[in-house]
Image (cartoon, helix red, strand yellow):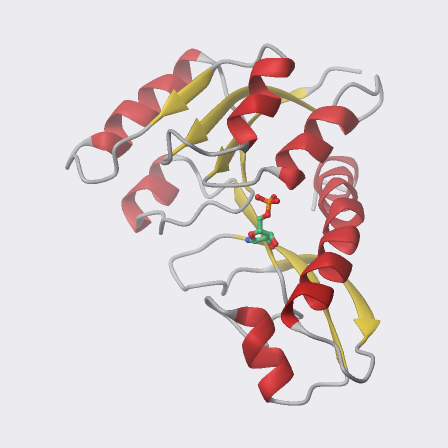
Length: 188
Ligand code: GRF
């Protein structure tokens, strides 16, 4: 199968990057990760990229024209899709347009509920009975693009932020690859 070229944007731990790198080794997984972009030179996730010998680009988001630089790299590596995986910066409308809106993200809640940061604490404060994760297309609205896949679980009594994070991430590592398969197999 001819795989599409993907770029993963990270800022921190990189557990989703690690999982996607592992999955993309399967001959029938639709993407091959060609580039990793991080706004944080200390991101732990960069170690996974190194382990898999994937080129990494560290960006300085306070530099006004950094997005133009990133776009040049995306062209150089013939990137077809960007997967945001814990990338903590907002992508500009101009960038999305230049890249033809082929940007997807994973968010640790059942969108449209709990957009934005501090998700787990807000979920617990609201005494939700169910939560999960969502993979969605990125548009100019924060966590507002079309939903591709969701996975959920019931919250147990006495759950804390750390439990919720752990259980959500287990589902994220299933949902993200599934969403990517869905996009390319079903021409979503
Ligand atoms: C994930 O929980 C994702 O939902 C959110 O950021 C976290 C990134 O985790 N957007 P990791 O860096 O992939 O471990």
